[in-house]
Image (cartoon, rainbow, N blue to C red; front, side, top):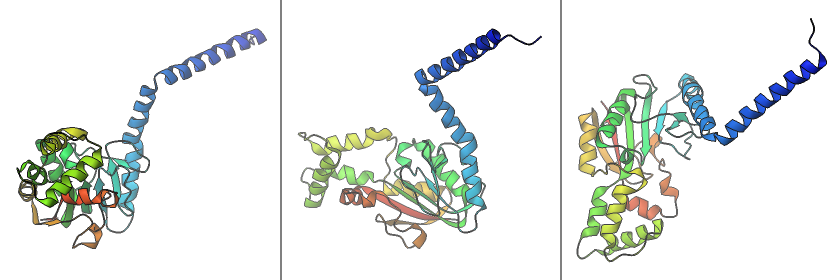
Length: 251
């Protein structure tokens, strides 16, 4: 028996109400929609990006924590969803095969990890690098900040102190060095700030050799030169003063 016209109208009305209610629910609960988008990015889009990149000929290179930086010829990854990036959580196993890249670069990432998480990140970097591949890490240098605690600051340290306060629009206090050091240790999700000695020791512990220190943008390897995005900022002088860059070779 064919349904009546009135029956069709009732059915369509119910469908419309259901669809409308679903749309209203998603509008009110956009957090669920964003969660679904994030899961799709991690489980579907990101593996496709990585597979497509690794299938292309040439030297494969990994950037960890790319953010707004897009390096041509690199697999640009981040923990937060951004267009064109693949998902990579530096505290979890990297979604890459052993020895699949020739270079790894991270700029101001490892200081956002705990000491143990940083250990895991370096071990994974060693795993995905091919023998002879290179790693380049840019991160704050704790020694630069402890210099601010001196009683009589040298002129270069005093200039750095003033520019650092200006960069972040931080207030003047009776002890600027104490203020800056505490902010550097605690702000932006920082978990562990390294000295050159500590980071060098961690790299060597996990199988890296020929550890060298460079200024932002400078490298003896053309593939790793001009990598730091912060070196292009208006406060690049502050970045050059407070950032250490260590480069090493995977045994």
